[in-house]
Amino acid sequence: MVPWNASGQATLLGTVQSTSDPFDSAAWSGVITWDAVDIDGDLFWDDDGTVYLHSAGIRQQTINLQTGEVSEPVYVWNGTGSATPEGPHIYKRDGWYYLMIGEGGTELGHMETIARARNITGPYESNPNNPLISNANTTEYFQTVGHCDLFPDGKGNSWAMCLATRSGPEWEIYPMGRESILTPVNWDSDEWPVFSQAHGLMSGWLLPAYSRDVNGIGPFIGECDVVGFEPHSSIPPHFLHWRWPQDGAFTVSPEDHPHSLQIVPSRSNLTGAITSDDFALTGKTGISFIGRRQTHTLFTFGVDMKFDPEAPDHEAGITAFLTQLNHISLGIAQSNHSVQHGKGPGLEFRFRIETAGTINSTIPSSTVVTAVPWCRGDTIHLQMHTINETHYGFSAWPTDRPNEKIVIGHASAEVVSGGSGPFVGTLLGAYATCNGAGSTNSTTCPGGGNAYFSRWRYSGAAQQIAEDEFVPSF
Image 1 (cartoon, helix red, strand yellow):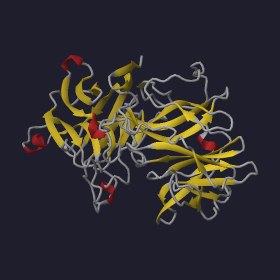
Image 2 (image 1 turned 120 degrees about the horizontal axis):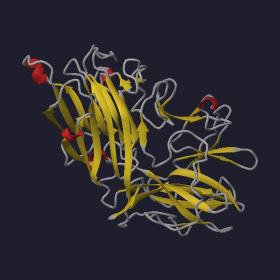
Image 3 (image 1 turned 90 degrees about the horizontal axis):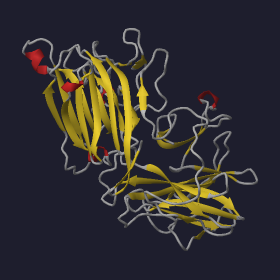
Image 4 (image 1 turned 120 degrees about the vertical axis):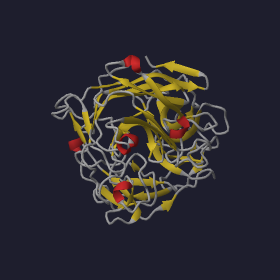
């Protein structure tokens, strides 16, 4: 769902598409839309062919998937009395309609509950053993557990997929945001499902043998990145943007810089000016940033960068990015000092910590500027790695002289936990900007600020599964 309709009015717009091949992007149909009554829309096909739409609330409607026509919403269950009943799912089993929902909000009070009825419209009887799963008011490392879905495997065993954060009850440092966890479920005939509680290490049904012989594109979960941006290749499908970028912002292996990714700078930098009258500076017209998700507690990410800025406004580098108001970045730019004093070309590192999105943050926003000690023509390797489970370190060196490595700075992962993006998780990637230079409301920067990134590398070292327990990733 998106928070506006085709007329630009503030509303919730429900969308649905269909396909005969979910792995082929070209096979998906056009979008059918409707004015949604709330978030978390979920579809259920009953035996007579009627399609039901359930939404947060918990409200029930019928829907015509060919036209988007929906019936008037009806409240069918208000949950167990906890806050924010949402995320509904319906399952039909043994003559019962089971209605499962998330309750308690999606923070530390999160839980999953269930009710059932003989008729899909109710009345629904609550499970006397609710909640099905929750780590609220515990010391478990996995917290905020809820918003689950149930499914059977090929042998008829039941499983639940739920959302959770790896934070402990402090709920302060969880840079990967909400993640999906898998837990086994016992569901006997005519009974209520019984979930195993969420821990870092659980026993359950026998998992199938590991295999890469599956449909789909993109890397497997937990895989490393070894991206060379070869000629005639495409941007990897698991790379992501923050808002849709401007056309031409990214070019793989341009003729004058083969085996690299060219990034044309955006006028908005990573933070932007969200309330600016200059719309191009808000970030809503696209930011020249591209990244991949942080998928390990401990990792190393790095790229080689060729960058020859022609003005102090031109900047390019790497970032751990949660939102425009919560991120950490290491950039290179032309030094204002060298321009003002006519000392010729000179570069500087700009190490930024942005925490404007965190209320009452104990970590202030800051920028530390230091001189780049190498020649302008050097290709620089920029790297970030986890010093431990709570801190990132940033460093740089000329690609042909790794012995000249210098550590630029470090920052707490709390910067990219919660704040203005408590659920989305951190992206690790590269960016280019002219920091607002150019004409008002223009999306184009003055020339000379293109950056070229090559040898993109990401490798995971370990996953944290409990307060003091790690599982190696290799």
